[in-house]
Image (cartoon, rainbow, N blue to C red; front, side, top):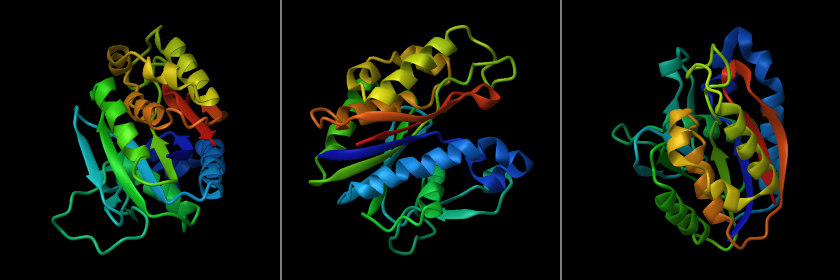
Length: 238
């Protein structure tokens, strides 16, 4: 059963080594992420799953100890997903979203429940997201989720997806749903609109919505901003 969740944005720029001189611009988001992770720790879960977006319409599981890095962003910095066995050369490396999640956990010295990862494709259907969420929630008596994902990337002329007039409304609805733990509203987010707006958080948020069904969790929106024309939200459910 899901007992807590933290929702965080997943840009590699959240990692100061990647952001370099621009690092202070996301200090407030980093602080909010740490606050959300404190809610997870306080819930004392038996299992923690980090859920984040990846390419395509598939799902991939990552065991505790899976490794990733930020070399693709010009930084020789490696991360490990929780505490697990030694990674093998042939093991799949964490996608960027889960690597950011692993970095956030390391930043707060996560020493709680074992950690596993689930990457969900940005084109994954809402039905498959729902199935995944229910499956995660059934893994233990006390399950927590760290849900990585960004809002639209079309909030300004310089945004990755350029300016789209629909983006602000989409992000407003998403922020409201995340801040109130409104699972129905998250489940109802339009997958096609989300893809057009480059909102990578849609699929992970819908995994969360299904995992939280019947859990009676309450939500708090800890941070909301759109630097670089991308919607970033931090929320805590408990």
